[in-house]
Amino acid sequence: MTRLLGAALVVAGCVSLGLCAVAWLDGRVRDLGELAAGLDALQRELGWRLSPLPQALEGAARAARGPAADFFALCARRARSPEGQAFQETWREALNASSLRLRGEDKALLERLGGVLGRYDGDSQRLALEDAAAGLRTLQGAAADERSRLGRVYGVLGAAAGLLAVILLL
Image (cartoon, rainbow, N blue to C red; front, side):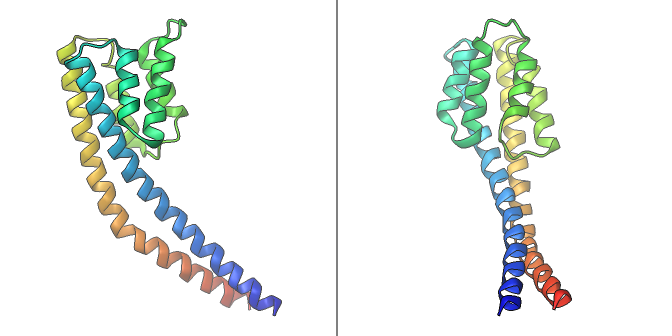
């Protein structure tokens, strides 16, 4: 009886590892979409309302949800701090401290944007925000394709690995 219970637990553990991988892929798609929505709000605040950068970041935090909203709120808090740190460093530190599920190319796109914000004129910032939001939406589409393609693979692979481990252990 204990062998059967142990076998079931091994299979369940392997299946849950596969499902965790699927959840990460799903979260990446969601985070990229929320970041794009936040950048759209940031563009409106900077381009049309001519808000100061910390206030515009707060507006982006209100427009986004989840980890993306936390990222924009952290940027706004750090941009208001009197430390005198360059905004590009503030942006990079907030990006690294956030719980966003991003890959290297996602972070590289956002880091390039951080070098433009608060440094150039309004039109340059608006164009950079448009390009970054379009790039995030492109990455989001690719991530959604990857999720639909690899999601099933990870689920089946987890179950197969669990069954193989049970066979080897019995």
